[in-house]
Image 1 (cartoon, one colour):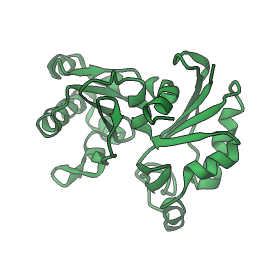
Image 2: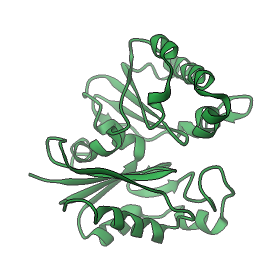
Image 3: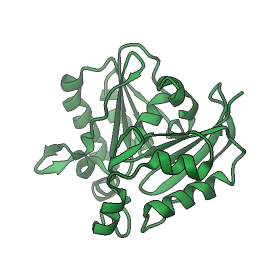
Amino acid sequence: MVNTLTIDCGGGGLKAAVVDDSDALVGGPLRIPTPYPFPPERFIRSLLRIAAQLPEADRATVGLPGMIRHGVVVATPHYVTKAGPHTEIDPKLYAAWTGYDARAALNLAFGRPVLVLNDAEVHGASLVVGTGLEVVLTLGTGLGNAIFDDGVLAPHLELSHAPIRRKRTYDTYIGEIQRREVGNARWSRRVRRVVDGLRPVIRWNRLYIGGGNSALIDAPTLERLGTDVTIVPNTAGVLGGSRAWKLMGA
């Protein structure tokens, strides 16, 4: 039996658990706030600290926000800021995170194999059934996304930065700050507009909506989202660690 430590790194918190080969929880989940400023060195220390509170694992899966390619950070939206999401970007942090080989650094720090993916991709690993085009959207600090074709992870598209309405991006249209500003009912209608707008573009067979704010979509909106949409619990972010390795052929 192989145990996998899964850490879901968000803008507001770091959530972790240990799962076995059957995706059953062995320890956790637990959560600590994401500390800011958050340079790569503090990122490593924070992940080691949260891992020390959980049972031993043979390997680890880490989900990071932003564009991650082969374990390397191409761009990340929150950790380059001075005080957290939607605050001023720190040029030194921006330089430190851009091109940062998170997988190599974590392999060294943990002394065991580590898989590093976008956080929505780890969410998706726990959800997809492997048939048709399956899409994952995560609602939290911003918008996360992942696409799977017959269970194979597609190259990542950072939809969160795409323009949607009145010079807004998806992040600034249905992110957490906007939800607090406009209230759940209006925010829920925005979520529906996003789903309706993306449906003819992607033409998924199944859309999964997760993340910490998925539970806040109001009942009238849930009824109108469509039969091709499934709302999933936020625990998917820490339950997909073992399956992520299988989906990546590891």
